[in-house]
Image (cartoon, rainbow, N blue to C red; front, side, top):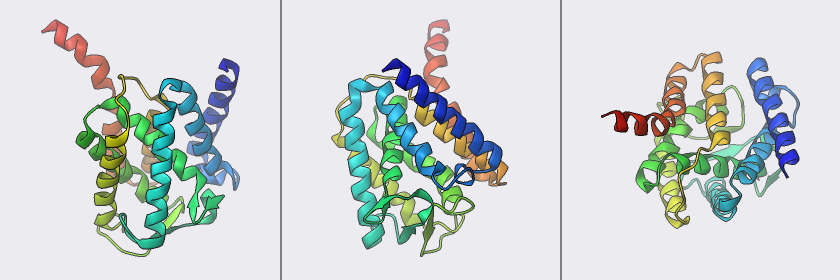
Length: 223
């Protein structure tokens, strides 16, 4: 299992670096973008085997909300996925279910508070969506909003759905979700490369936030 994990980390690292060098994972090969998320999600599960049920629940819930969103426009607004993240099931890319798993794992590593965790999820989407619906072409919106063309209802939907997902998941011990951290970091650096400086700034805050858990106990003892 350790050998498999190391191999997966190696492939993930190659895609991570290659994506930054070329300006997006999807520019490497047609299948690189979904493979990037699928491997990242697999690594997240293997790195946190004690919580594999919670992670799979996150993925399943994420898929159901995406399915509802694609076909009804609720709770995120009207949008559709392109072929970049194919293959898909009923219009929802399989890779997106792993994306939900990765991000839920990341915020659960930062906080146990449901409301704060849901706001962090929405914050992550403030970083990713301008890239995914813009230069990366992962999906496209049928409605227009002021934030890089993304409707405000999308972020309301992210908060509400994240609250529901986090509320049904079992309690968890604190841990560092390196995969989720690296994914947020990837999109943060990519935002800088694409000249999307507001999403990049939000991403930088999110990337630096986990350091609080590391540094605060020392500061608390020093006081």
